[in-house]
Amino acid sequence: MSSQIREMSGRWFFKQEWGFKSAPSKVDFEAFGKALIHCASADGELAPAERDWILGYLASHGAEESTIEMLSNYKADQSLQEVLAPSTIAQGGRRAFVFDALRACSADGELHDLERTAVTKLAADLGLPDGTVAKLEEAYRAENEAKARRIELIFPSGVPF
Amino acid sequence: MKNDAQLWLFREHCGFKSIPPPMDTLGFGKLMLSCANGDGRITDSERAWVLGFLDAFGTAESVLETLRTYDGKEDVVAIIAASPTVKLSATSALYEAVRACSADGELHQDEIATLQRAAKAMGLESPTVVRELIDLYHDEQHLRAKRLRHVYPDGIPFQN
Image (cartoon, rainbow over all chains, first blue to last red; front, side, top):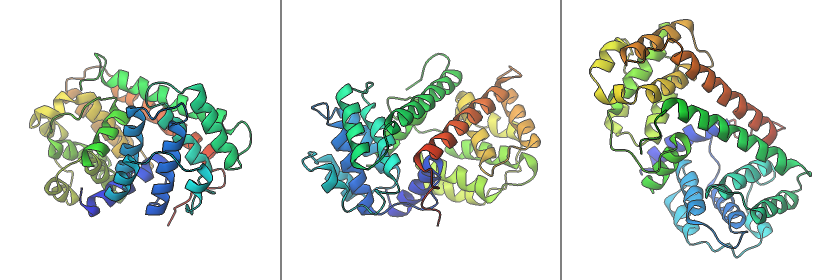
């Protein structure tokens, strides 16, 4: 993917999903990706569907190839504090980290209790108040249900691919 | 890497498990822009939405280049007649056209009328299909706005 196309596609995604008019830096992409892998590994393993979700998510949002390559080999062997330390947006984007961690952990079809615990710990480490995870999980489920209704209307006989 | 990004998008947005074969993205883009032109003009936001959407789904640069200056004045019925793949993905194409028409913050009555003409030309005879798609779009937008309020209670960053 050329860098120009990657940037255009990334900008479109950030605007669609998050209302951003510009994209975060490479450092933030890396910290964000590591934090997501950390949470999704909390039930003892990073399922292939979870890794695919995290890497695909970041790639579709404009992450550089070197970032994707680094993350594809990342073993979640740092603490969350270490992972998030270089990020310039960890403070303002705390709830976004938590929301995307919930999405990544659910990518294999199940949000395991240990994953929910890890996401709750992430939220606490980020200084978010109690109840934040429950509120964001509810928002995630509501969006997922709306998406399912749309897919059912568009593909009433089942998705073709 | 391109495949990682596209597969994620097809899974996340459409529920697909694999990347579908190439389709007539030029016809698809023309349909979206012609619907957006239903109210007599394609705004910058609408065109940017269509180009960004098609780019994200892996559309060739030559097609994007054509659509950058496409005036959207073709009849949607003729566009659909000339593009079997657009007709094949009828409901999906209509839904994306609803999103494209709404990208400037307003879904004009004349845009809705154009969407309804397109639905009929695609063989979607139900008079309510366009309304159902618009309602679904509004539901998803409402939930997105609610999420953004939860996630960024002090305002959305990256506004420059």
